[in-house]
Amino acid sequence: MTTSYQVLCRVEMRHAYFADGLMRGLAARPSGLTTERLRRVGLLLRPSSTGFEIIYAGAAGSPPPDGLRAAFPLVFSLHPPDASFAIYTGLLPAPAPTGKKAGKKASAPVPPGPAPASVRYLAPAPANALRLHPGDVLSEADRLPLRPLVFQQALPAGTRTAALRHYPDGPTVWETALLPTAETLPVNLRAEGNGAYELRLGKAAPDVFFAADFPAPACPWAVLELGPAVLATPGATYTLGLAARRTYWQYQLMSSRPLPEGLAIDAGEAPVGFEQAPGLPGTALSFLATADQPLAERYPGAACRLVLPEAGRAPRVMHPALPYASPSALRLINKSIEQLIITDIFVQL
Image 1 (tube, rainbow, N blue to C red):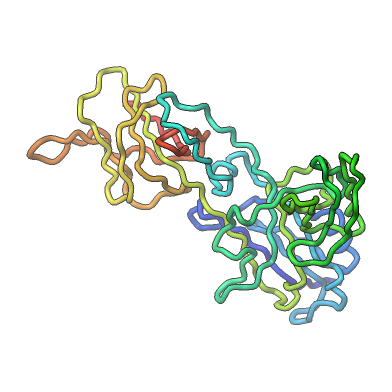
Image 2: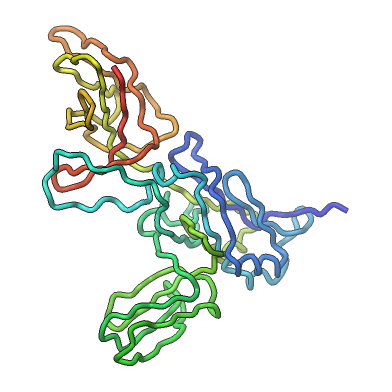
């Protein structure tokens, strides 16, 4: 006997870096509580190349079974497919201004380690899409720290009260008075389960975080929480959009012979220019972009050219098609009062 399955909801990952706009290989893993809830109500998780589906047994056109609301929220950790994901994805914190003048020495490469954990909620659907976040792509406003369900919270000196509630507008879990000598506060959320919480310690700023029971040693890049709103539109596809990281391109020209004076980079119709700048050791000449650009799997338009301007005639083309930027180790440099994220492009002449 063959069992038919219907889609309760579908989550599709999209990424502006890729030519077709789809993010492949971003694995979704249910938390322990979510796994138990799915089993209890007869729902199954079916991975796809660009996300996942939650399905249930039933004939074509049959409605979802009763009692599903009790299974929500469903919480999944998201795990990138490769180490380069953190480089070409534009979600890491922007560099903070240094307040210092630009230095002449380039800084060390930035390691492409995983970003701090983030969390997304099922937002009300915009007019023309069912997105899993308010904007077109995830932003810094969507980030929350991830904690286990049981942890010890360090207390600032003099803290006399503590209160915990479901974030953003849920009920209070508990309020308590603290002894003057208390240095830590035990927090146990096993009875409450996975979700976002706000912890208030005295008059300090509230601490908002996401707690989940992911099996150790889980180190997710993000956490996705699906709420019962998905039950209102069975079979709908929800999208999670990711932006491409924007970087300043820096061409590092290398040559075994002296280069002519006056070389320049012709960016064609690209909305960016290039200026000579201090290069890395061993380079003969370096050009830094005047604006940042998003990294891409494939770039539209013609490639930049290395040219030698000549008075009264068209510039002489020294290199007809310079390479495009690719996801490689990033570098920070100081310029004026800000730091720039650099992608180096090496060219042997």
